[in-house]
Image (cartoon, rainbow over all chains, first blue to last red; front, side, top):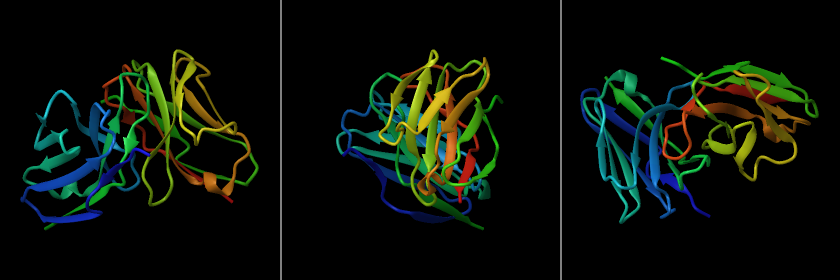
Length: 113
Length: 114
């Protein structure tokens, strides 16, 4: 079946450094992608999204890159802070209806002081 | 900032009992969703709801599950006869529209089946 997955379960970076979290997806019909951040005991928090007609989108300290050729999505976080420590999920969706999101397994980002 | 709220934060129920999980979506949102996350696993879609009816549902959402919008603010998930494997975090989400719109999640209800 179709799935969304992440390359690394844990990523550790120094505070102040940039981090890149990667995600591979297999459904070539997916046309909408989201990154969520989940802190312990909380629900997924929306970070940034991108539609399939774009290959890059920037937010505050975050950038999402989409490579449809290789079905790859990445989240770049600039100048990481202790509050960035969390599990990050990519999620994808096909079509314009009220379908649910398909989530990846998550990457645990650890910010070292 | 508007948020999705869920109650209770933790529900402990005996196997075979019915349980109702409650959610208050963001007030101007029209689409509502339930997801679950078994401990250590990824978030899984259960069901979406719009205009007082189910829009989409996954294979997980079998006859034991039902959803309802009993009034203008609440959205509920009912599990009729709980099983041990129903133990999970249950997340409610809402979005303003369907399609390519972000879904905003509550902090979940931890359901523990004994």
